Image 1: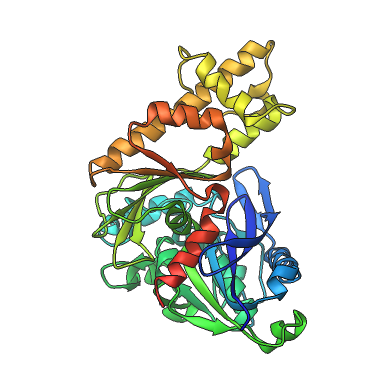
Image 2: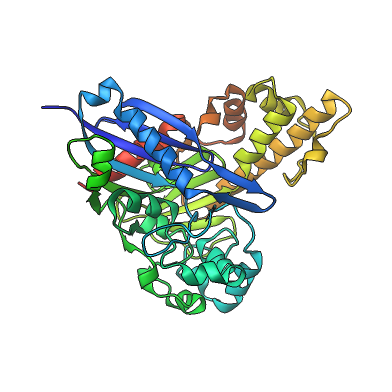
Amino acid sequence: MKKEIFLVLDIGTSSIKCGCLTSSSDILVEKKEKFPMIHSGSSFEIDVVIFFDIVKNLILQCLSEKVVQMGKVKALLITSQANTFVPVTNDFNPLRKGIVWLDERAKDEADYLKAQLPDYPKYSGFGQPLSGLFASKLLWLKKNEPDVFQKAKYFPLINEYLVYQLTYNFYADTTSFGMSGMYDFVQKDINGKLLQILELTTDNFPTIEDAAKRGVLISKEISKEWKIPYRFPVYLCGNDQCASASGAGLKDAGDITINFGSALVLFSITKNITTDLGVDQIAGKYPISDDCFLLNYEPDFGIVIRDLKEKLFKDGTYNQLFQTYIDYPEIEERTPDFLDNDLEFNTGKEAHQFCASIIKYYVNQLKQHIIGIGQKVCVNNVFLSGAITKSTVLLQIIKKEVKQTIIINNQENAGLVGALNIYLSKI
């Protein structure tokens, strides 16, 4: 009998990973491509046709490996960034480029929804409507691109768009869709008041079920195109932060994972949905067990750190970048709202002090987030994940500033392992 192999897709903000794993979480093959984001000012978009081509290419690269061909694919598991969506026709043809969660154009719409939905924190998993949410962006689309909005039959999130292209079925999971700002955790359905405001119905949205509950076979067309003599099911395994937390080792209430990705995310398990939330906190359904989660985040951490590295340490290393924090302990923190022309310095010392001030801001925010989580749960172990944790200097800083026990598992591949954990928890 051939060994069972799981294809796993981890769709992050900066990259798309595809791995082939055994049921014991051994990674046989791992491929990665840059997430094809188009950035201009406050606009962050994606061509979903190009996105789908990249995904297909990654999957085919993995399937072509000899170690994979010696086994048999049991299932394709998908975990994905939240709030990135595309309006499509009845046949799922995109009507415009997709809008990425980082996009900040819907600030006015978020303020409008805040006034219209005074009880929003009691059921939504958010302290208030935010410009990055699917709900706010849908209203922005309705107001600013009415022709597109009226022509659209569906508004799939990026993981939902992908599974439709693979299976011809439109479905979602409560973890990913629950982070859209559209979901009501009390009613366990799409929020009716939001549907009224948007003049949409539940027919415009997918069937929503628990993560990894529904598995739909890849289409005959995909099976033929990929030259696979059999069809395997596709499962949605929740948001990428949930998967990364599980893959990093999170198991019990009180444990925290800190994921250093495009966003800096602190993730913890709670027994019930949290309603007293700040603007930098999200609550939702944890895809493993009947528990919920509490998530604190700094949305631009990885983007800012990568920008500093490429602009000021182009031929250097992340260790050299983080070393500035240690070299200049007296420097005041600075919020990371700088422009490119702010990165022009007369001396290397000035550049290094600037980097130290930005890193100090994130370190201080990290400590405040841990304090905030500690007010809601008793903090125990802290797990780290994300490729940047390979920086020994960053680890030195974290171990000095964070007082809890630090555990590192899987690092940049925590999302792949976590998606498999979520699937295995349901069988």
